[in-house]
Length: 61
Image (cartoon, rainbow, N blue to C red; front, side):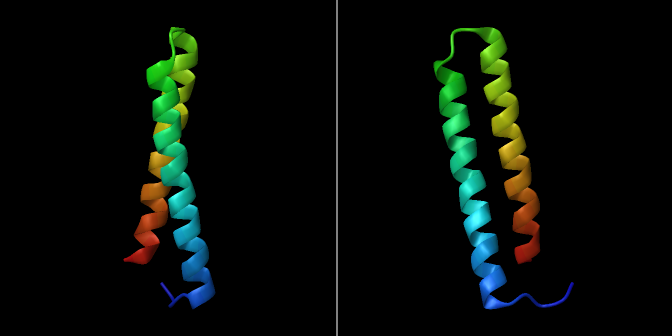
């Protein structure tokens, strides 16, 4: 992979942070849910956010 610029690195870090925040918030929402269907939606969205964060992190290696 080609080297990334400082601006691209800043954007990547911002995206990783945003997905990390989304993951944490969605997990919190899921834990507070009583309805199992809504809980499942939040849990899936949290997992998707975590997966995306992990994929984005690979660009830092």
